[in-house]
Image (cartoon, rainbow, N blue to C red; front, side, top):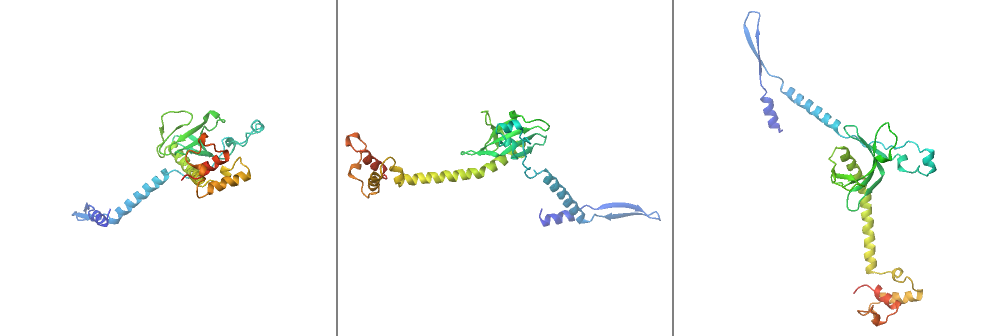
Length: 255
């Protein structure tokens, strides 16, 4: 609302009238109007209340991590299971508006190379013992849908601010950092492979040959002009090249 609109609103405030009778029995009409800025104060109070209500509806910060099973018992310890995540404080709690609770294993979030992520979840029921059947792996597309990983089926929606919408946002955010690291590592490996294809190393093409043979192969590979026996069709059995000559021709960069 611009300043002109505000002034128009204030100057257009209706006037109120009252009829009073004085001691002489005369009727007098009094006209008054509320202070213009009382409306401004009322609007400000309404906006403050609205903002406070909206802030209260926003999700709070991430819940502290907890365990699924508080202590690793003697039986689990005898089987070397105490290092399992169910005994570690790595589970983040998410709760829906109707009290449904799902915990997510923050240490087992797997980024997918083509996008999306996989996460282990546990449907937590207060006052009950650990139930392995409630451990479920979910696949999140990171574009608003998810499904149980072990059950191939139709993707379900995970709208924002819903229970699985909040879980998906948390899982996909956590998966993005390792996904970028994996993509960067793959790019480095591909770059090295391309470079090795264009510039072979002796360690690549000398495997299985003696040091003297490796020196001869290296000389043939790095020579400016290809050895005469490396003419097109050198791999044909009729050409009669030995293993050293064949390795030299195969290792030379393509013209």
